[in-house]
Amino acid sequence: MYVKRKDAIIAFKVFSDAELNMHHIVPGTILDTKSMTSDDKRMFTVFKHAEDAISLAVHMCMQTVCRVRVSGNVRELEGGRLLVHHMQVDCDGLIPLRKLLVTVNKGSANYGIYNEGTRNDGNHNVGCNNVGNWNFGSYNLGSFNFGTGNIGNHNSGDYNYGDLNEAGYCNVAKRTRACVFTTVNNTGYLSFNKPYTVNLYTCQIPDFCRVKVIEWIPVSSLATVKDTKEKCMYACCGGRLKITSYREAFRISFEVARRKPDWSKQRQMLLDLPNFDAGIFEEISGITPNELGL
Image (cartoon, rainbow, N blue to C red; front, side, top):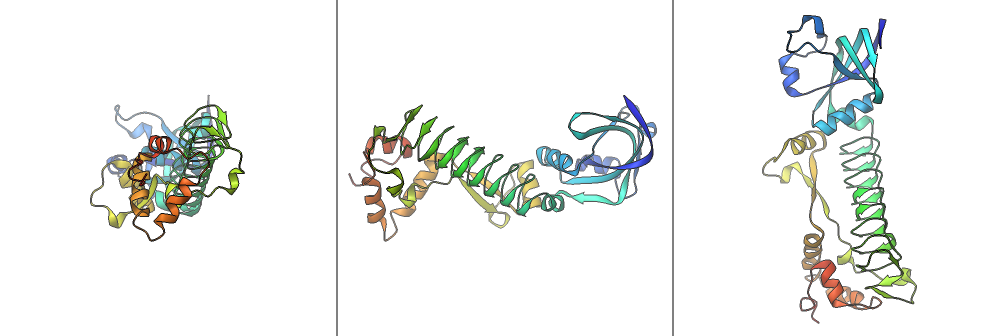
């Protein structure tokens, strides 16, 4: 059902670069379906709230959001969308996406909305370098993770690869509780797939096992721009988040660690973990017993 509005209301419209050029969009431009050709004569979709327009711009990799004044027949849809026949771009209505992202995030270089931190690609993250939504921590790839370096969803722990892992470290499994280096699903209180009796929180995890598969790459370090999203992220954030496979990240961390002066200490920390098993460690990390000097 359409409602005819006498007074103009403020809304937000996302334009692609092609649309900006085709319609010659500048501050003050009036767009009306009556003045368009039959091919272009359709309703305009605008948003009541800037956040919804920003989300669409991020999703569609568009770099401009326009603040517009809408009048005439208006039809309200779900998700804060409006269908309109007539609108005018505000005098200062052409807003680069990078400026809007600053207003809806607490932090810098975030590509999404309602993030509190830096360099997050997604929404509602608290931390840095997360790719996904609703993460509380850093370097998580997925959503609803509480911790650091998790790959998957709904993990509360660190450096887990899987889903629904609770209070553990470096597990490649699902639905584990208080486990370390475990590959068994739906289990609890295991270290290298065997029960342990020590206090888990007294165990020292070697630094090189704290694997992060997400890395920030500043635009100055990039030779080429591969796709539209990268182009948009560079323009808005000054770089992008690079995702590496779990084993590749483990390999890089290991190669760096064994060249450091404290390698023998790091190695011994690993061997001292309850029930250490070189075969299971290789299954998880790709690092062979021979490379560990065993």
